[in-house]
Image (cartoon, rainbow, N blue to C red; front, top):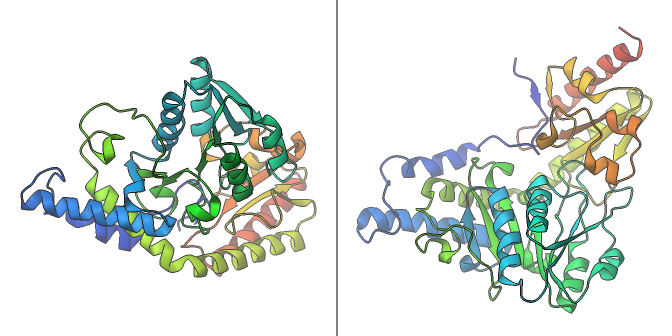
Length: 379
């Protein structure tokens, strides 16, 4: 029997509806979207449709969507593109201590090029305080980049408040929304962002395709030189099948949003309640309310998370971000939240998804309970 999959924040399976949307562009509709003949026109129609569907989900114009090779590329385009285009205005970029490596490592790269990076702290729930941002802003600040929802603990950041501060000071505001798109509403005007990153494989699309929303009027430099695809921001023949997939995944997310939120909230609460009823020393990491409905980062007292997962092969979960898998050091996210070493090393991230059932949740809770009791008994 396949393990119960509770690692949807690492990646999601491609939805069957998305696969069907992709197939024609992997077979008969193989044309280059830049070609003027019938084959190219058919491909171009798919690109335009995917762009419109993504725009509909985010509440923006189709011309503000730029497809990339994934979330990390979109983050690089946002940060480097804004930094290079605005270097004459100043060199300070403000981010947080708990960003995804795609942001943090890009910031390190820019720091090596002479830009000044300010890393905002978070509180014990993993939340950025807008007051800290106000104090960090200077006349040289050219970009603020704060993730929408944390990939490890699920905490949702107060983006609209941060966006207000950015607008007051005429500063570009980017958010990495790879973990929130498709799970909770991500309307760009409500979030008050100028740039937003999404990654298809986080919400039932394929790997290797993502997008960056760039508000009209924002000046940004391209990172890939070549022809004029994607408004000149991302040269290279378009991944038509991937773009069609992004569009379909966005359409599904829009249609299923209310149901997904309700189901994830209910099953997640059931899962956590079952664990706390049966096991002592259980603690939730992250904000208790302002959190992704599918994400539960749970600490088990006197338990090593890696060991727990090793003796519970029937469950596929994570000791933290998939990008940190295998590490025996305390997660930087938990460390930034002030989580002590012993508690942090006993933390497991369980992330639910479209394929999770009530039966999965109940079986997982039972398995974890049995293995923890055995580990504590020294068996």
